[in-house]
Length: 91
Image 1 (cartoon, rainbow, N blue to C red):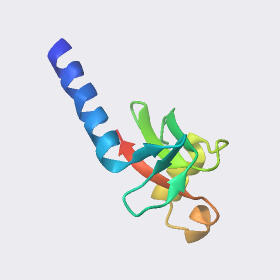
Image 2: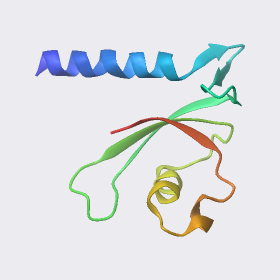
Image 3: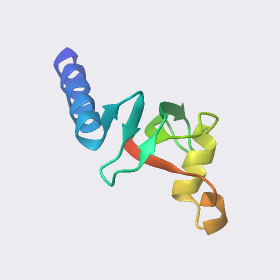
C-alpha cells in the first residue's frame, strides 16, 4: 500500500510538472495560457460511492468542486459558460 501511494504521488508530481510551467508566481499551461492559481478541489458526484478530486489551473480562486464537475459532465453547454480553467488531474 505504501509503495502504491508513493508511486501515485510521484505520478501526480510528474503530471503537474509536465502540464504547466511555474514562473513569476503564475502557472502556464501547454498552450501558453497563464493562470494565477492552482486549486485542488474535492467532492462527491451524485450517485458516486467515493470522493473524487480535480487539480486545476485557474484565474478564479472562488471556483468550487461542484461548478467544475458540472462544467465537465453536464450535457448543457451553458454549465461551462464563463468558467475558465485548465484540468491537470482528475481522480
